[in-house]
Length: 242
Length: 265
Ligand SMILES: Nc1ncnc2c1ncn2[C@@H]1O[C@H](COP(=O)(O)OP(=O)(O)OP(=O)(O)O)[C@@H](O)[C@H]1O
Ligand SMILES: [Mg+2]
Image 1 (cartoon, rainbow over the protein chains, first blue to last red):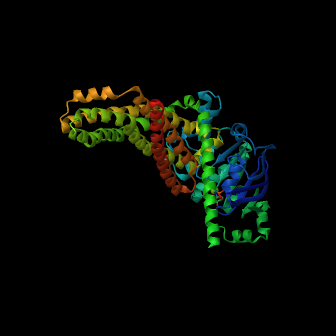
Image 2: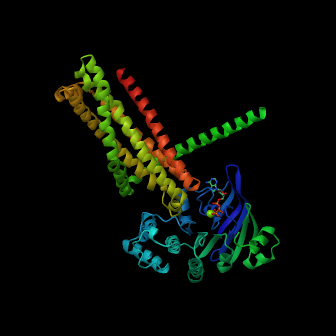
Image 3: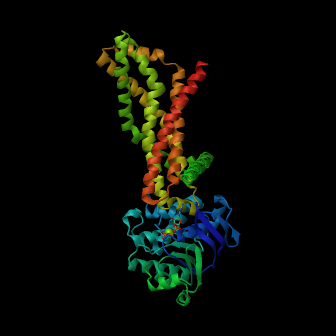
């Protein structure tokens, strides 16, 4: 379970998040919907302790991670995979190396076990035949799937997606969303899905929080969006591409 | 008027605060890098890669610089000495200035440009593409993995590179003295060997490790501190070169001054 309690964050004098509280239960998919530059990537990085809130607390399975050191954070981060907005694959490493690197770094596994786990992710993501390619050679959708495979390498129970469909064509987008839904169905993987695309929310999310001007202005089931009287939500539903 | 003055004062204050903050961050960054030096064993492959990049790939520009140093000193100083009938002293002048000052300085500046630009742009690109966040998110310390190998490789490579520049500078001086001043190489080398004392080598070789540490930490810090997309990487690269070069120029002077003062008693 991921919990933000009255989290505020400022960069210099700019207040990006104001008193945000949010809970994400295991095995559920929570979408966080918001316009560009609202602080969506920031919220995801807060959940992993990559940045610290100016005030408030972040709790993972009831452990307050706000003041933990990098070493103390590691076992907590292992519970959550992350798929970065631009994938953040290592461009000098092959697909296999991108996936195996962190296993080799952190877990004392045999080479056989590493190969087995990487093969499992490659198969799941449908990347057979590209094991030894560099990320540069892959399409946007395939890179995203590599990033998802890498995020799953520690067998987390939660996965954080930062705009997983942004910049993808509709077919690739659908593949990624199907993959997210399948992960929840088949292995009970919970997810946080940060996005500015309304159709992503309706495709996979169990519930959605809307982030606007640093605040959560809505937090409920996706269908309830239509009942909201908030002018931003109303205009967003009318012009979802904004 | 007073309004303007106040505005100016606030912006100066903001700027000073920014500088103080960056200095403090840089200090923490450096301490963490030193604390993680042991990671060089774990990431020895990266150390080798970086040693190749900063050692072997820097060779051409260093060779060109070193050859021109010795020749230039002979042209400038040798001719003056010849006017006073003292051209046999040419070797001494070349030896002292090359070994103590010019070779470490020029090599240091070239390395500041090459290594400084490379570290800050490469790490800056990794920062804006969130690769550094990815390392942290999956449990790898980016300072251990990215900074320590660069620091160790530079510390290993700078001294031999500068030694090479010393030798090439002296050799090119010998050739030019023979060709331009008709000075017998035997006389040149004798005066070179005569004048050089251990102290001169101490002065010359106190510099490469200091340059290596300064350039690596400054440029890696700039890379890590990159924000603001592609333009930000450009800014970091420039900062990496400028601050590294300034560091070389300033420490070169003070190291010479302090060590020479100490040794002259
Ligand atoms: N390191 C930083 N220093 C200063 N400002 C920052 C920093 N990182 C982000 N910001 C600012 O904070 C705000 C939120 O950034 P964030 O990346 O979280 O937004 P986002 O919702 O993910 O945007 P996008 O849709 O572009 O991905 C932005 O206005 C950004 O300019
Ligand atoms: Mg973002």
